[in-house]
Image (cartoon, rainbow, N blue to C red):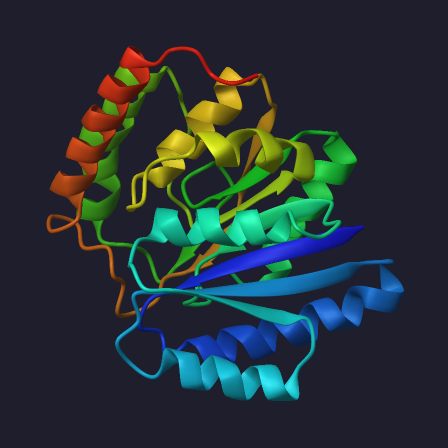
Length: 249
C-alpha cells in the first residue's frame, strides 16, 4: 500500500518542523512492519514567513518529503494541488492533514485501517462523532455555532449529514481523488463541503471515524471572522452547482 499525505502550510514556520518529523518517524516505522510505503507533500500556499526555509531544512534530513510552492493562499487550493501532485505517482491512498499536529499520525493511520478493513472509498476524521476525544475541550461556541448554522445549512444545500465536515484529516482511495479533483473549485476553508458533496454525487462510500483531536493554539480559523465568509462560500457553491448539474462521470 502506498500512502500520500498532503500537508497544507500557510505561514507555519513555528509548527511545520515538528509535524513533519513526527509523521515521518511514525510512518517510517511502519514501512517494514505493515508493508507500507509513504510520501508527504508539503504545499506551501501564500507563505510570507520562513516556512519554506524550515521545510527545505527538513527535506535535507529526511526522505520522501516533497514540496509544492504556491504563490496564492487558500487551504482548498493547497489540498487540490497536493492531490494533483500525488496522482503523478502510483499512490493507492491519498489524503491530507493539517500542519498543526492536532491529528497525531496514529489517528491519521486509523483512517487507512478503516478504509482497508471496512472496504470503503474514504475515511474522514471526526471530532464530534460518538467516541471522539477533543483535548482540551473546545469552547462551546465553536461546537454550537456549527450545530446551529453550519450543519443545517450543509444539509439544506447539499443533503449531507456528518457530525464534522471540517476536521483536518481525510483520506481516500486513488479512484476517488481521480474523480473529484477535476471537479473541485473552492479555494478557501469551505472546500471540505464541496469535496464530500462530490464524493456523494459520484456514489463513493465515505466513513466518518471518531478521532482523538489535540486542539492547538493559534488556529487560523476563527469562529466569527472565518465563519461568515464560509457560509457565503457554501451558498455560492450551491448556486454554481445548480447552474452546472452535470458532472463529468
